[in-house]
Amino acid sequence: EGKTNGEGHWIYERILAESGWVRARHPQQKDIFLRLSSRYVPRKGQKFKHFKQGKNIINRIPGEYAVWSKEPLVENIRQYNQINECKYERIHPASYFLSRVHECQDFFHTFAPKQQTNRQTAKYDDGEEMKFFWKPPASSFGRGIRLVSYEKLRVHMRVPETDEYSNYESQLRDRCEEISEKFEAQNLRSVVQASVHPPLLIDGSKFDIRAYMLMANTDPYFVFARLGHVRRCLVEYSLDSTDKKAHVCNDYSDRLEDDDFDVHEHLWSFEKFARYMVQNRLIPGITKEMELIGRLEEEMHRLFVSVFQANKKHLENSNGYWSLLGIDLAVKDDLSMRVLEVNTNPSVHFNTTVWPRFQPEENFVMMGEVLEYASAAFALSKENDEMSIGEVIRAFPASESGWTLLYTDKTEKPYYKVEPLCDKSGSP
Image 1: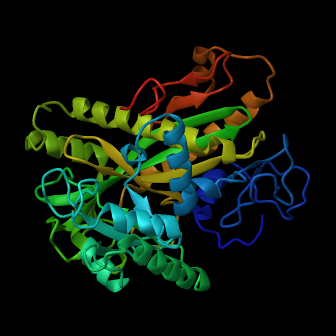
Image 2: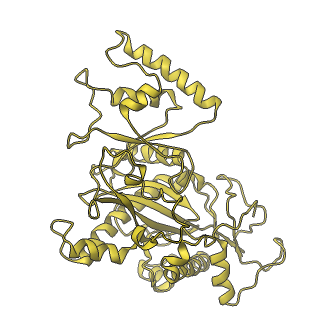
């Protein structure tokens, strides 16, 4: 469907070919069951050209752009948390789009050096100076990300200091209008995002977690989640370090293809991570691997339910739409997590030398289960009767790779495995 570069399709095609499936000769062939689309995603209310509801399944959901594009994702989480009366920073790091005048003002006003009692200094709770990431609207492998301090950004943007003018607010508004006009003229939608601090460390190194969310159908919904792997920074962490590789753990695209690069030092299986952290007593109070995995899984589940709820209304409901998303998570030293970004078609392109060297069989198992779950959800969606949660769970093959059902509305009342991180009953 649409223009495709085949991204991620090689692994699907191998799995299907080994199971006896045959590639269609023409997109309008009547007996097509699975359609694959790489880049093209319609907006909600639009349709794929050849998709037939109830006849095909396709690995995209119209409207899912709202989930994996930084600007709508942040906006949707903000709105969701505002409705539920809690801070969106519990789900996603504080983020500001300087192309918007009011957000530009909010950023420079909020984090300016403390001059008045209603302003906070740009510092974390432990007194360290806050650091921010300047991120492009859509990128991968850490490309385009820059680490900046408030002062460095203020000087670069030529924003006045708080005590430089007696009419600071009007000066700030005027400058933010100029910045907005310049950004809009150049179609710059970059985001300034606070660094998550203090992070949990692996022997002094920062890391993040790649986890997966599968929306196996959208009418009704079947939403699954699983932990993936750990990406470890290979430079020792310090908040003051100017080396981006100490802060951004997917910034190794310049090394991944090198024969002498040890991918197993950079990418860890989750089992290896849990075993290492427990054996080396790197987390106070955690003495068992399953205890650590359980704590992180529950936190991940609550985050995913929150992200799904924040974006659900933007997705098209139709039997046959499904999508696999890779969600990158930062872990703080108290084991709470934050969603860094959401990726479409995650880590399934095998046209590099990286993935065949890291968990190749595990990835094939996971992707095979993705196709099984999308097919099972499609079949269940054709049954008109409501089901018990036990019946729903038994309708899906037991998962070797760890998929867990988080949400479905196929039951009499919508089923949630866990509560979202915050709701109207109170903040987390």
